[in-house]
Length: 225
Image 1: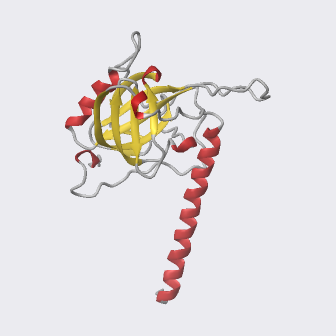
Image 2 (image 1 turned 60 degrees about the vertical axis):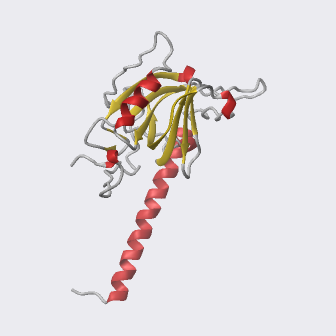
Image 3 (image 1 turned 135 degrees about the horizontal axis):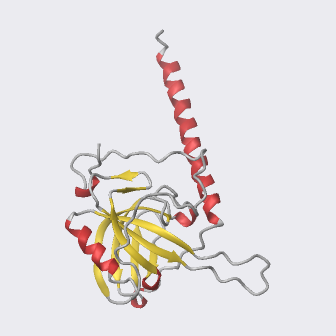
């Protein structure tokens, strides 16, 4: 049965509004669920306090931040799960991720535990190991003596950065590994297997999706079939 054009358009508009509402509700639920688990990340220090530039700035895609060891447990709190184009600069004091349309992320050098490569995380999949995953610890927030609530414990995160150009992948990986303190695990491999210590994903949250890369865009935006 052919519906009149105004009716068909109205149906599509309603469906679009419903889908958008579900996405927004899922994002808010994700933010609420992780807000009480992940402490506020360190603020970006003044440029003079970041140390000497080791590498960058490099054009890259900030893929997401997830709970360490679980490539689907995206962190919604503090904007850490928001994908964005970015410029990444590695200083000897830490990694500065300057994102477009989202808050900057600062990973202090003393918090970096490891760096590895992966072909995908948090719904972003490419056909090669082009995403540099930085494993780091968000320190616990200090709590005033008069506060009744206990301090939020430190949390380990995996932050994915995908350089725009292929030749920058190895450079970024080595620069971040150079920040790992002595006795750390600079070449820790990312398995992608969910950690037993992580709560299961909320079934009402929208499932991660595979993004399609537009032809002729970044070298590392080609995705696996």
